[in-house]
Length: 231
Image (cartoon, rainbow, N blue to C red; front, side, top):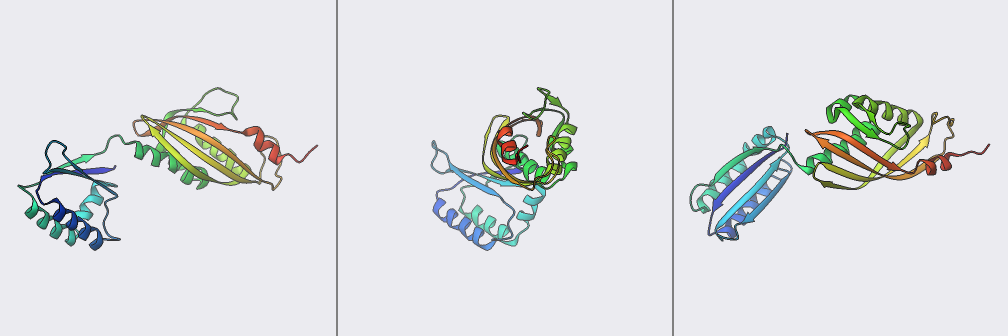
């Protein structure tokens, strides 16, 4: 679970503190576990600063704290503050960035990597799937995704290029390009060895940290035309 630490302090020597942070970044290059840091200044009080530091997990944050450079810089930072800084430790329970990373794991680790066990980890048991390939308007169950991935992997050797992801609320939209080589039965069409490409967009809705619903939009007929070998 992503972990965030919020550091609240007051200082009239922010330039000196900023230099300290640059020293810490240089000294811990390749070893620090923090993935993101944002510093904000209070518009109502120029000496009031808040830093938000993100880590992959609480355990990784503890590794970061145990670095000798972290302890040294912290002591020097406290000396620059007007009073003792306060720390708030937070486990992140919702983050659109986390949802984007989870959606990306589907393409990279499940669809291309073939890790079907991961389906149960990132898809809800009552997942609802909307796909132009299916005759049913909605297919329900995480097992449906396992069947779909198996179907496509048996028919093609393929990969995905993810162009962009947009997260808003509980949804993540991914624009992708799929490229594959036809190597197995595909909707009655026997292997042709042909290469094919198609663009698509998938919208994933999240609930309780898992993918609860998916809408797939892509040019199935265009794909078949690329594979068509004539009568």
